Every structure is written in C-alpha cells, then in structure tokens.
Image (cartoon, rainbow, N blue to C red):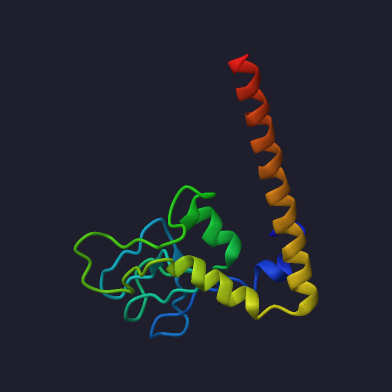
Length: 143
C-alpha cells in the first residue's frame, strides 16, 4: 500500500506521541517497556511517559509498522510483544495489533476501503494459487 497508495498508508497505524507532544512513538520489534521510552510494537501505540528516549521526529505509520514491527510478517501478528519484566508501557492483549489495524481500516473513506479490499483480494488470490500448486505437487509425488 505504501508505494501505490501513500495517502492510505499514512492513515493506518499512526504512532501516538508520549506525554510530550513532539516525542512520537517509534515502531520496533518489541515494546521497550521502560519509563519515557518511545519504542512500541503496537499499531497506533503510545510511548511510555514523555517518550523522549528513542523518539521519532517523523510520524511512524503503516509502512513503518510493517517494516520495523511486523518484520514483513514474521513478528507481532496478531499480537504485540513487550520486553520481559517491563515495568511500563502497553501490555500486549490477544490480537491487539489485528484489532488496531482493523479499527484504522474502518475509518477510511468508502473509496479507500475499496482500494484496500482490492489489494487484499490480490494477496489472497496469490495465496490460493500457491496452495493449488502445492496440492498438484503433492498429487504428482504420490503417483
């Protein structure tokens, strides 16, 4: 979505600021969970305290969330993570990232939702093709 539809990308998973408005959250593989730390693994999450440590000077959005937190699908989906023994920060809840993304998607305009649905359909179609290829391969091996 980032390359072909950056305006939509900018509306999803907008990291919040800490108690100091200019200290924006920074997406990471794990929520730091230390006082005044900005590293978060929750879509549209909020840094702890002021968010001064590890803050971002630019708004982190969906593309940053995918790259830094989801690691292109290998981490934090559907639930975020926090460092063990963390004393601050938003504690992970079952499916919290999935729910946060869904919440942002519901706020899109009708046209934007149509674009996102088309992108998801293309992704799903690709998955079905891969599944069909695997089934054919399995059948060939058995015979």
